[in-house]
Image 1 (cartoon, rainbow, N blue to C red):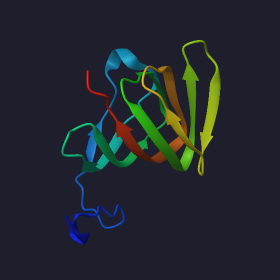
Image 2 (cartoon, rainbow, N blue to C red; image 1 turned 90 degrees about the vertical axis):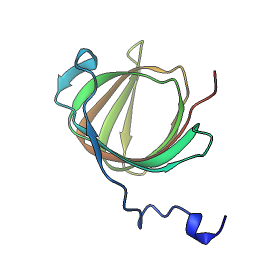
Image 3 (cartoon, rainbow, N blue to C red; image 1 turned 120 degrees about the horizontal axis):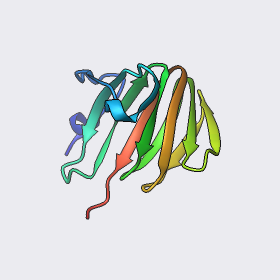
Image 4 (cartoon, one colour; image 1 turned 45 degrees about the vertical axis):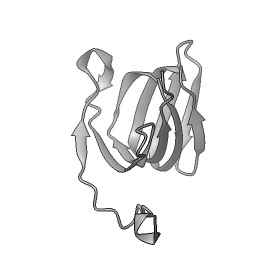
Length: 120
């Protein structure tokens, strides 16, 4: 490995992956999402990049651990009991594997993420 193997998000030329949650998971709006997955580990358990989401709300069920940093917009994360946390630019947090609830984008949102998926 050398310096050319370092992934600089500001220099990455990663193709955008556009998608929407499965129809049965959408609760409000038309939450189109865009993913720039800049890094995949050789073992396949970790990836990192930039995620963008449009206004809407959908059900989430995390099988992975995810570190997030909101860089733009406002979202609300709710657990299965309805407890809520509003997330704004500058917020940094980890969503542990096993979390389920909803993600709602109130203002178009952009986040940096690092995901770690445990082996079964």
